[in-house]
Figure 1 (cartoon, rainbow, N blue to C red):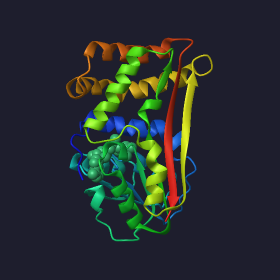
Figure 2 (figure 1 turned 45 degrees about the horizontal axis):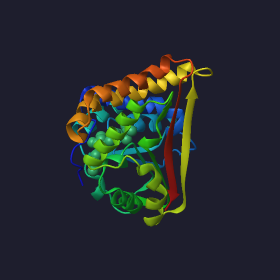
Figure 3 (figure 1 turned 135 degrees about the horizontal axis):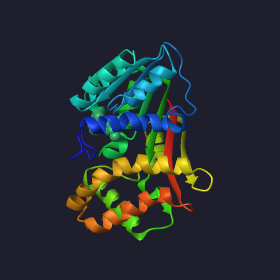
Figure 4 (figure 1 turned 30 degrees about the vertical axis):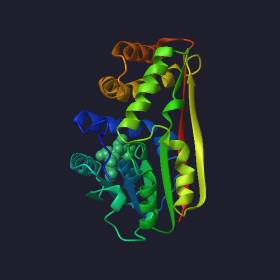
Length: 269
Ligand SMILES: C[S@@+](CC[C@H](N)C(=O)[O-])C[C@H]1O[C@@H](n2cnc3c(N)ncnc32)[C@H](O)[C@@H]1O
């Protein structure tokens, strides 16, 4: 089922951003505790530009890659991108709520930065269950946008954060979905379900480069949402801009710090 408006869009710049985002989270999140075997099959649902598929295919040679995305532009980009990496993949344009694969098809299913945009996340986790083989694994990573907090505290940044959450809700998504992953997985029939809240915290006196790279990474996707927050969540542009400036200024502040919680739900069919 398609949501009303996908907030990040499908420009080439956005596709490149998705590739960079996957690289940014590669070791700390995407490959964390993952160990797939050669010959096993892997499906990424909502694969976008192919960044995560590229990481998996490179880290686990012999993994049979599949991906699906609703948008043809993403699949076209992913096809070229994976080809450049020398990776073979079965990529399909299609809707996650009616996956074009038969029951018990895959050893592993993965979703990341995806369910937050959708209005029927439980139905999609149930579809993932259907296409997994018995004993197959699922991994889902999503954040909770309330948890991306900065120090020094900024009222304007809080305003921006609230606006972003409202925008995601209005576009049919859920900015707090990370907390629901464990319940969705259990409701869908998965066993050995876990949902770990992974906290990422960086402070300037110890790791100024980590602070700066997190701010740059987040600012890159946050900045283009400002006009949409004004239009759809009826917020004031000047205050949003002030919030963004406070957010960006953390990287030049010797007493700056940033924290974000990302949830990682796992289970076995
Ligand atoms: C933020 S991107 C994430 C892409 C990828 N997981 C990554 O980390 O780079 C979300 C993707 O979900 C896709 N999408 C949205 N609704 C979908 C649906 N119902 N079925 C399949 N894909 C969908 C969008 O086209 C977009 O490419």
